Image 1: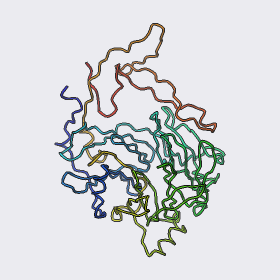
Image 2 (image 1 turned 120 degrees about the vertical axis):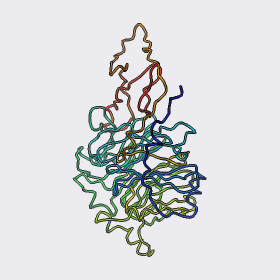
Image 3 (image 1 turned 90 degrees about the horizontal axis):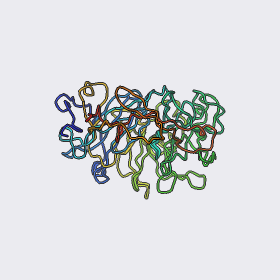
Length: 424
């Protein structure tokens, strides 16, 4: 039908988003074009989500939107997950393949679902192969997932953490997945007291294999953003300003970065690293400061692109004029010029999209089956089954993750990216 997937009242009423004027290296846009990707980044210091792409005329496009303390960012071509102060947002692309917004943007990410978790200081998000959302619950020193009724369901905690408490004891801050399954986490210390990590910043950092509960690397300085890439475990040893990998329980530095590293993503032989300026006593007294002085270099805020085969920084983008801290970076694959909607303007109230028409025929059941069917605003809903997410070795992981009941039509699920669907 002609109206399916159509965007209404958007191009006529939409105000242009704020964009950033920022310097970047000579071949930065060429590199984005060659890799066929755009970038997303968060900075909680200025409460911004920023997308970076290329306009049809070849110019950079850097729209930004305000969210309340945005931190962890997980992206695919058509979906963003964004952790804010007390919520996790899911933003869906509402443009169809080949459709352009204002003859320019090939993606339009719209906030569709928010899970209200309370202030958990979420530092990392991972999506497992079953589409379970797993996050680093830094405030409670554990890995957790969403719960349909409560703030979170704990999945795993380090053995040295004696209880779940809102005390940010070890500053557990990063997740590395292997084949989509969470496998490694980073923490700044092994402290089991409130904010104990703050006194272990220089050399208390660790990496834990959550399948064995073994510490596989220690003596690190404020490690962040562990990533499994090309059969190696990479991370940012932020307190020394280095990107490197773990080999035989040792951190092997590859590149010195002129800033405090947080946010790491790979594509092929390239690493994209977010950099921040050290801001207060939490960052002072680290080896990073000494190295910057030795190199007569000032700390930078922005992103750098590193060739991991040579260790060279080949491209960069500076945010110094717009922010002093970057928290996370993400790749938007096969996206050239992305756009999003936030809540500060009236644009989001004027956006209406309609999904594919759906047949309301009740689902067929066998004579022996007795499904629990709910009637919710005229929609037939079947209770979903309890599905475990990941098998971990701690006691916390023995409880299954509960998927919320999903509204279902036969034969399709309720669409996730549009405002509504039509019925036939």
